[in-house]
Length: 210
Image (tube, rainbow, N blue to C red; front, side):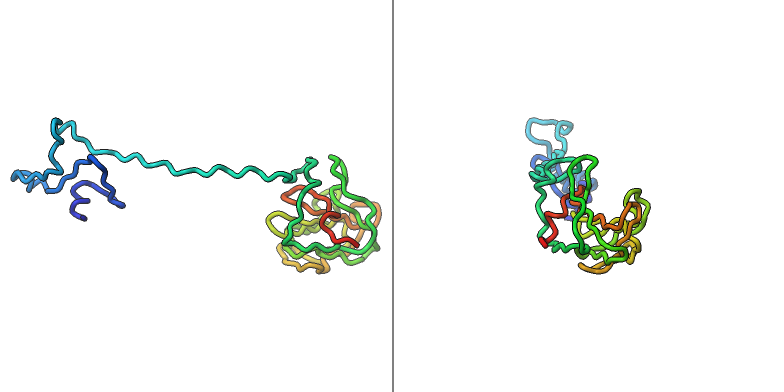
């Protein structure tokens, strides 16, 4: 097989095709008239008419992309109301206190909920995850923490007095991550958001009733 491949310039995976002309002898052997039937021209054709067959690869079957699921939430879309809860995350309230400002789908509405409390009150992770942001560079949020829970869900905790975790730190559900404050707001409160695939959703649909 190796000699046949060498004589005919075949390369792995060494495919040959119907009607393909193959050389079975070296030039020295052919000069003695030992031309094999496989290398002779087909009946009624001149040697110039005998050409090698070039294989046309069969195109791979391409799967059609899946249609986007109905009810998928995007920013500014009313379908956010129907976003389903990710069953793999068990959410908990990030702090105690009454909700003083609710969620709104309006373009300039509240993209989370605001919970009243006292200065220094513990703010806790609403679910386990990794801190992807801890700082105060985002105007309007004050001292802010953002936690990534999985590929779909983030939670955000704003207006804190003190941040107790750092970026890239893993946190457990209920872990004390900040002290409540009034940074970048007029009174002491926690602004809390849940984001699904980058879009803000109503936290009240995820948090347990109390």
